[in-house]
Image 1 (tube, rainbow, N blue to C red):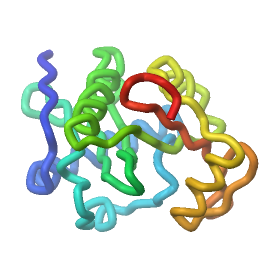
Image 2: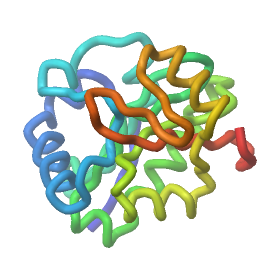
Image 3: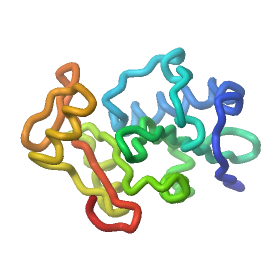
Image 4: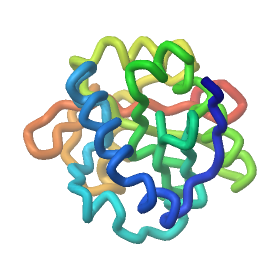
Length: 177
């Protein structure tokens, strides 16, 4: 199985929307909610946002989408809204190359860091991101992050809509942002 990682544009995502939504459902069923605090349906998933598609990537095998991430430049950094891969793609280590592609896109856009949100109970996703150098924001940094986005913050997590998420961040050079 050959994995080719390439930037996603809106047309590519539209062409693979059924696969993308199936990947997302499989990821949620297996790992729980490890996505952004934004709750998306298919229409919101495809909503236009400045810079979202330019900083997105997909992994393809035999012409089928097997993993994707969708990010946008916001508040001076790359925020990853979605990172999802199929269970077979997990075994092929698709997630790591997708994250490296996101880092390259952020670097090319002169963005100093990447942030994403992960459900507090999602131990698998937290362990994966920590291995890649992502660290949770705490206290003052977390409060500033949440205030800029209009979501409630506590000492170590945000809780939009009553759900609990850790916000992870990585500076592009691999240090803490």
